[in-house]
Every structure is written in structure tokens, then in C-alpha cells.
Length: 255
Ligand SMILES: [Fe+2]
Image 1: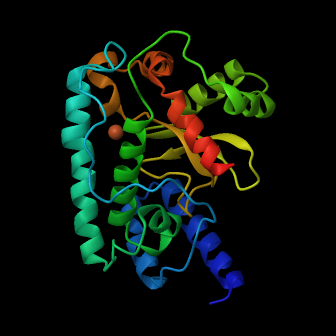
Image 2: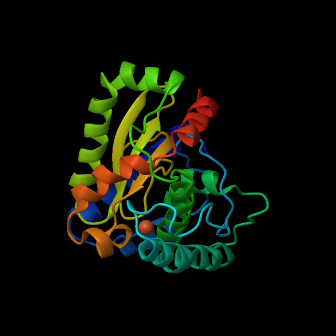
Image 3: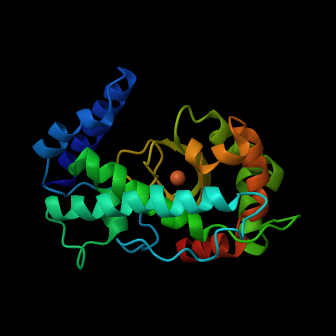
């Protein structure tokens, strides 16, 4: 298949997906499209961090992110919500014939339009949560990036505070459930975006494509026990648990 046709197909699927969502249809309306174009050759053009298909041990205890994220929220989030995405992903890769020893998860995400809605929801859900756990550590005040990452943030957003505002707004304004992201695009520019549901910027269905450097879960299950409806409070406290050393390593790898 030529790249030209591949691009057309991706645009078609993107448009079809957006039209379906705009019309109030669930993403479960998409499998028929995915099946029709099911040759798995599309791609978002970006590569992301390798994350295993299986759920990995949480890199810290459930209470380590207190008081920003409470232990019960962490326990339920990791052992129920995220575990379910990993289990459902395992079922989906078997059902759709993915050889996980050869097909990296990040590469599968880059052509997610060619798989089912179940794959899209659970491959995204699993990847995003594994990525999220690694992006946090115990809280500290005055938590900031340094070095080359800080310089690039200042170059592309004007200041760290301007970046924080843009990212926080992306999370606050994401209607319903989804994620806020800092990504680096193929032309090495830092961009803030957000995705609905369990989509992410590696996916060819995403409005903005880029390598994720930082992601924030703004689903209610991530904050409701402690913050109830106060998503903005959750987001403003969350800055204290961002693991900037990890974000810097992702940035170094992508540049
Ligand atoms: Fe979540």
C-alpha cells in the first residue's frame, strides 16, 4: 500500500471518528471501520516509550503520594481500574492476533485505527496508566524541571508558569474523561494537548501526535475520593508529585 493511500485512510478514520463522537455516538461504533481497514499498516509517525503489555509493579507504595493523592485512590486506581485495562488488553491482543513478542505496544498504538474499539480503549488505558505511575514520586514543594528541559519549556511556552497554566487548563477543560499531555513533536517542539477517554498522542486517531513526556489522568477515578468534583484542586496539587527526572530522561531520548 502506498503512503499516500495510507494517509488518506488515516484522515478518513480520524474524520469518521470525530464525526461519530460529534454525533454523540460511542467509540464502540468504530469497530466496523477498523475491521474494514484491518491491515495494520497505518501509523501516527511518532514513537513512544516502550511499555510492556503486562501490568508492572507500582514503583512506590500506595501511600507515597500522600497527601496529594491518597492511598485508597492509588490502591483502587492501580489494582482495579488499571489492572482491568491490562487484563482486557491481554484479551484483545489474543482475539486480534497480535504477536506481542514482535509488536511493541507503542507501535501498536501508532496504528490503533486499524484495530477494534476494545483494543483502542484498553491498549490506551494500559499504556497511559503505566506511563502515569512512572511520572510521579513523593511530593515536594518548588518542584520544577531543570537543565535542557527547562530551557525548552521556556523557549516553547514563554515560562514554566505559562506552561503549567496551559497544561492545567488542558486538564481542567477536558470534558468528561481523558488526559492532559506534554508532548514533543517530530520537529522537536514541545506542545500541550489533551485526549478523550484513553486515547493518547501516539495514536493515529489523535488530533495532535507527538512523543509523550508527561501525562495527567483527569478521569474522576483518579481524584474523586479526595477531591470530589474539584478537578482544578487535584491538578494544582499534582504538580508537587511530578517526577521531573523521569520527564527529563524521556526528553533526552526524544531529542
Ligand atoms: Fe485512571
